[in-house]
Length: 71
Image (tube, rainbow, N blue to C red; front, side, top):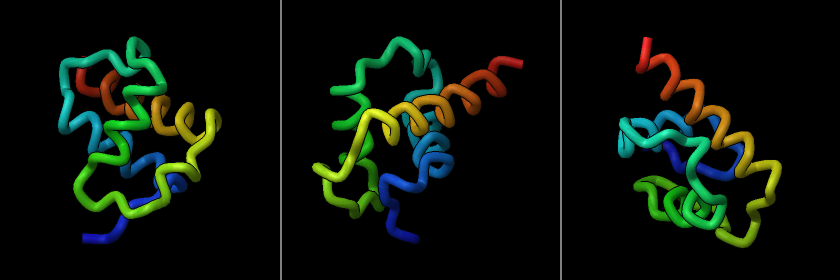
């Protein structure tokens, strides 16, 4: 498995959707999102290297997966 970093928003979004398929990503606080990302299998980046923009990109990628799952 390839190691994930904060730059891998699409892959992380998919992984979060697979882990929490019924959770609306837009209802998740960034503090929880940050923790869940760092706890993902394969995540190997520095937890302190995140930013609001990176978390938002991950949240939006997750949201797109979640929306597609509702169609």
